[in-house]
Image 1 (cartoon, rainbow, N blue to C red):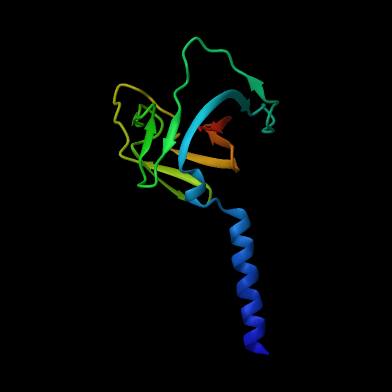
Image 2: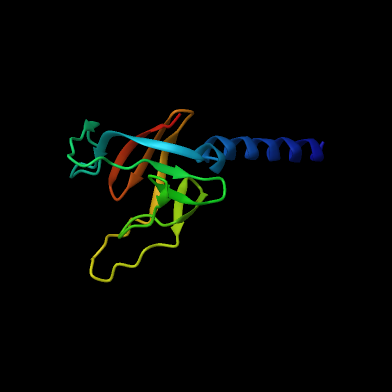
Length: 137
């Protein structure tokens, strides 16, 4: 009876963890910006989704199976955000091989939170804003 109880508890823990955490394999692929953004309001709640207008195209992002992060097919590191390599743990994307920019004062935006991820949509939280991405074909 004790072994059956222990088995049931182990299964419940495994199922609970599976539903909360994103497997890195789901992230692999090319993601295109949808130009939809959400920011935090002064009270700390998320505001409505808005479509941003920009004169400069936002590059696509690619997460490879080998742990590389690319923007428009090139190394993804830039000043203040991201790096050339990534790892996922507890729905947080952590970057390494970052680019040093001593002349720039940056907020800590190296860790990106995966808010939502399904077959065709990715929502990332980076530095108090959320952005939507669509999976590339």
